[in-house]
Image 1 (tube, rainbow, N blue to C red):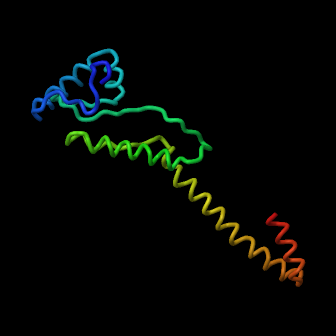
Image 2 (image 1 turned 120 degrees about the horizontal axis):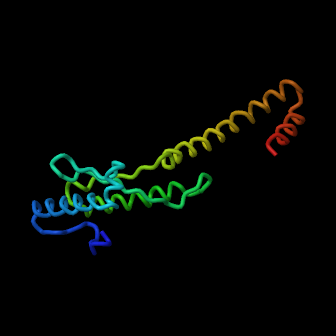
Image 3 (image 1 turned 135 degrees about the vertical axis):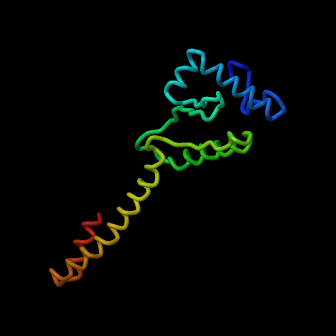
Length: 151
């Protein structure tokens, strides 16, 4: 878009049919260039046998690390951005969605790990206290031993 001085959404004509034809022509011409061929050969731009534009795949990197906190906020920001694009996009190309290899899927998994760990501690400490009371038959020693486990 930038090389053609166009911004999203690309308005090439006010007539919907002419707009669709010009946009398809724009994409088809671009996929004939060396840069465009690179994307179309990897299946990132889809044009059917009637030379009608069907889809495009846009990939870019975001600052993301395995141990980064606030991943949910990053996901929400990009989801809001996708929703904004879908709102202003013409019908037929307003169904964009975001995905990632594993980053977004791990957000829910990591949250579940934390919840599971806390539940495990909440179950283990009282059980350890109960076992110590039964084995020592002294609640004070059991309390000291349990507090040593927690600390």
